[in-house]
Length: 147
Image 1 (tube, rainbow, N blue to C red):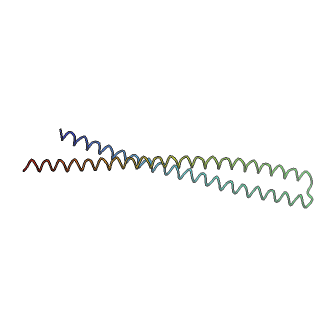
Image 2 (tube, rainbow, N blue to C red; image 1 turned 60 degrees about the vertical axis):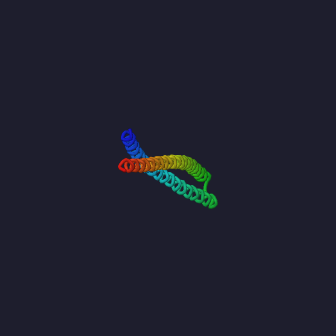
């Protein structure tokens, strides 16, 4: 009976080790996904900043031309270009916001994977302690039999 229990504990311990290893791999995978999502969000934010600079430059040039006495047709073209820049900027801002949201979602998944890893480690450590106590009891019983 005791040997059957021993083998059951060893199998359970091995299963816990495999689970912990699997959780470690999951955390590593989530970390790489999180890094990629953060990089995409940062790239989108940089693109928004560049587009804002371009829009400000277009507006500044159009204002300078109008102040210099440009024609109504040129002013209309400048207004159209500025509107196009604003729409592009708005679209880029929405994309950046969406990517930042995805990065936050990946962050939550990463935290969940880390929590699962901590749980697997705790379960394995508990099993190890139980197994060590069982071995100590077994050794004590063996010593008592030999006396």
